[in-house]
Image (cartoon, rainbow, N blue to C red; front, side):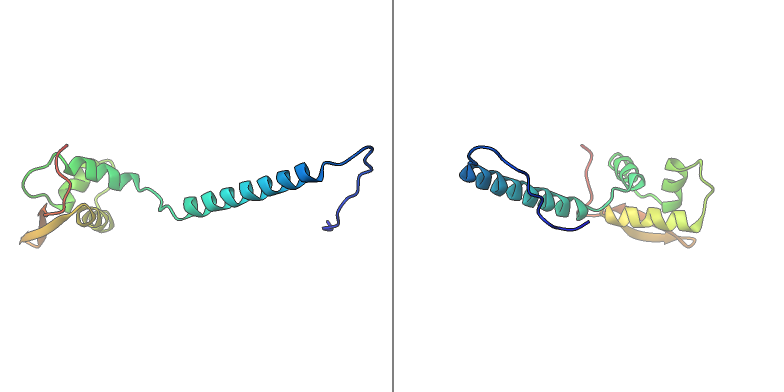
Length: 118
């Protein structure tokens, strides 16, 4: 497809001022769409599992383990090291910090920047 301008025969007068205003409006609209597209592309995807863990953590008091969180929220999935590690990342991102180890298992407690109960 070529980029040539197609000429259409026109009868009567052409309102060049209105035509120029319409062209400018179209260019402005195109810039707005491209800007919105860039903003949309920079929004990180939402991890629904992380949101589920964060919501559950708001109501917890004391310490938790990644395995306990995984078992409570994702009990239908087989327990695995990768699931526990993913939950540990969610705990850290939510502001929880490891406070002690009991027989090799990290126990997490609410940190200073953790979300509080609403």
